[in-house]
Amino acid sequence: MIGLQVKKLVIVLMDALLNAAAMNLFLIPANVYTSGFAGIAQLASKLVEDYTPYHLSTRLLLFLLNIPVAILGWKKIGESFTLYSFLA
Image (cartoon, rainbow, N blue to C red):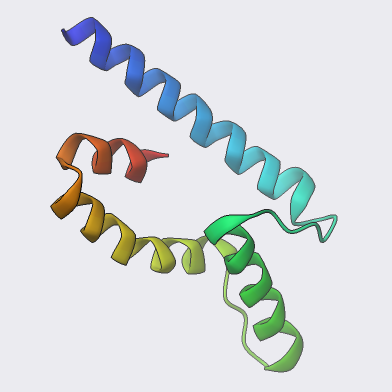
C-alpha cells in the first residue's frame, strides 16, 4: 500500500516538474498559451502587464484560479485526489 502511494507521489511530482519546465522554458518566453487554467493565467498576466503598471505572475494567478476547484474537489471527490492535484 505504501509502495503504491510513493509511486503515485513520484509520478505526480515528475508531472509537476515537467509542466513547470515547459511553461517557464518554452511557453511563456515564446508567448504561446496553453489550455485550461494555465492558459487563462498566462493571458491574464499578459493583459495586466500590457495595460496596467502592475505585474501579476502567472503562477500566482494559476494558484488563485485553482483555489475554488480545490475546495470543490475536496468536498465532492475526496482528500487524496485533491492533495495529489494540489501537488501537481
